[in-house]
Image (cartoon, rainbow, N blue to C red):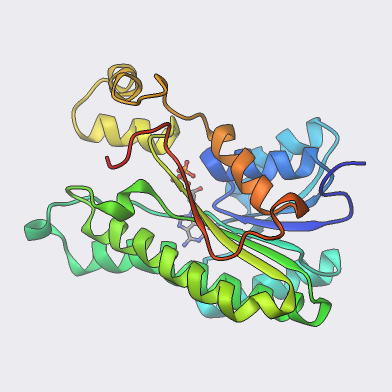
Length: 254
Ligand code: ADP
């Protein structure tokens, strides 16, 4: 008996990084997983990985920042799998720039995907959780919520996730739906390494410096975050309501 046997989990931004690790973990612990990304093609590798391990997953293309796309996509998932038990809001975009250079487009994209996307997906998913009086919603915040130079858009979105989480948790608790957030610190993902390259740094050196600056002496791998997301989505965490759990190896702030 696995923790997520018979459960349907939606993971957004599941093509790579934390989302892919989370989708894979849910599947290997028994869930049927909707691998959501901006296109279904982008989710193909994650689905292949899950199927290789004997798990069940289907890729769906949903633009989480677009309400029509979210409504249609969630309905399609529910039609195919018969419901939704777990939602993980992981889709995100970084468009870093110092405040004086930050464009309106940079702002809108980062906030629309991370924050509005979490709101739209949660709104669509809870319609199928409330009647069953059962559900789990976990959204990705970040230590950037506490401030990070060059990320006014992303840090505002990730701080917003904490407020959205706290409020949705209070509204949905009476329906036995747990809503929580996870705030990772430095995670060794393609996104992190691409950021290093954009900053003109060697990605290996960037990761090594991150590890040296972290009290636990290493940076997180995607599965270090996925394991906490899975805990919050499990019955072990059924009394945790509206929290943001920092998973940063002891290093507060960026
Ligand atoms: P991390 O590795 O930290 O999870 P990534 O940038 O690798 O961060 O993952 C974010 C994912 O979110 C990517 O796969 C990206 O395609 C996806 N994504 C970006 N914008 C959207 C969107 N509007 N709708 C759905 N998924 C999106």
